[in-house]
Image 1 (cartoon, one colour):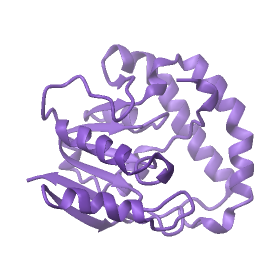
Image 2 (cartoon, rainbow, N blue to C red):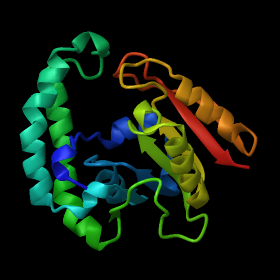
Image 3 (cartoon, rainbow, N blue to C red):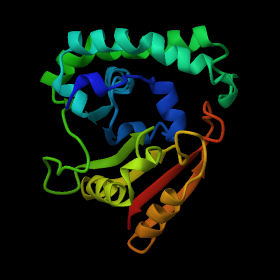
Length: 224
């Protein structure tokens, strides 16, 4: 994996809990985050006593390498946000400056925790749909934030393989959001949902979280 192709952008525990409807009871369960990137969810949840393991290929890089890459893309990302403000809901995060502060705060927490978290086995380099280092159900809940179903160019087979691998090791999987990068519903999402309906309990649930307009639903797939 080339770090030059990565655009790190992190969310915090409050956003995760709203995106995935994580209750207090859920936070007592064993949680896996897939494609977590530089989110601070693992750090903040672990500080509160939760059991969270995050998987992402960027965890093979050092904190200093990732900090350098964040600094390289920060201005570009914020410029893109400035050019598309009409695509977002500015209520909880009320301005571009606040957005930058929230995102940088989350990524700083992640960077401060990465080395220790890697030693503790909380950050594991891994890229879906590669096989995970577990023989069967290991986690209660598997999460995918702003990755699966958003990047339609990855194709149907990739998504089915990735979600199948998550379900192999998780009792249930939660995916947010259910739109593509332009906030549009996609044929891919419908096909993926239909592919899992026969073997799993599949539900679409409204969430309290909406920053990208139209991105306010979560997909829950559970082993029956």
